[in-house]
Length: 248
Image (tube, rainbow, N blue to C red):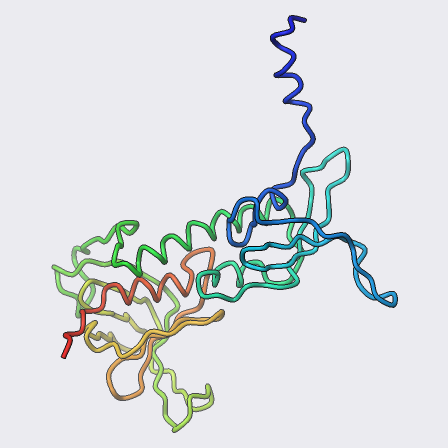
């Protein structure tokens, strides 16, 4: 075999390094992770090493793949960074074990998610493709551009002085539209519509998002569905469409 071909062969024989040891799957910072040996105290702890990130300070148990299949590693996060920019990663990674394939897919989606949230916060919604419906649903004008369409959204009324679920009354449920002018709900009982200027606040958590409208304690609520539309990204899109408040 010619000597010129040997470097290529040598490169192919280089040992496999799992991605979590090259960079953080959580914050996507290259070269920020290192492997710590197992630590046990009085017989307590794990026999597995941990991957620690010096940037986001996450800590995860790491199980290497067998010698015949080193790509079959697994990872389980023990300590998560709950900074807002990592909301998606927190929800998706949780604390259970993930296969290499699962972990890499979550990491890739999380990277895109974080950039889209950043875009929306800057007012850039170019990653969406708003459309005009013809004919539009009831209460929607022909010139309204629809940015998002979601099913299974509810409209609720807070009937008490607290914010507990026990004091909430479901007014309706159905298909929700977010346009450049209004929010609409094609409910089972009737159709509902509010101007974007009627929105008082937008909130979200790991389970759902909420849009509070008007002054009568009504809010639209939808489930957080990370593999379709993450609640944080939804809130950022709504806030990007809100009319700018005039400075006094």
